[in-house]
Image (cartoon, rainbow, N blue to C red; front, side, top):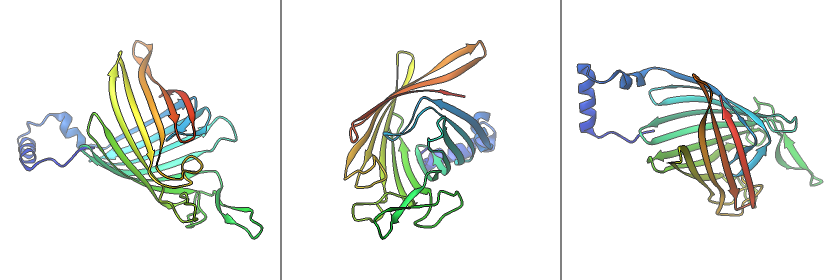
Length: 253
């Protein structure tokens, strides 16, 4: 996530590369990097919305020269909890980032009503991509990390997006502002999430501009042995739109 480097700096870096002066850490950016992990969370809270109870959330990713492909999922311990499987293709340079995410949920998606006014549900099969009969949601993201503040904009552009009151696609969007800081030996993060216009995708139904999430979270390394520690995090979230409040805890592996 970085901005465009000015020409003079670019010339200097090229010159350093040619002379072999650039440190090996900088050259290592050209190598393929991969990661695997999982979070165990006491509750699945996403953008101010309660999506489930205790869940395991695995992740797998690979990156090269700013490009990345990530896989993320969530499965609750209760059989009634929604299962989620996401694929994200992204690119970042300096503070700038763009990405496209394919969200898939195993729940059936409302696709209309029958002659008697009963809701018709579409299939939740993974390989079903019909415009009005899919459990996939496709979202585009663009953002910039200024350091003291990160700003990200998200918009659904295809799939099982929410709708407006007139039944038309809402192109549901979300603005996220995040500010990190350190205090008392912990790494903290303040998050503010805003839904800018009408949609049924967030909070059941949002009639217009609203604040959907105000959160404060902190992380800490829990030492297990002299050579092994587990990152732990806790987060307090409130949703002014639904008047909901959540306190979650998690461990990362």
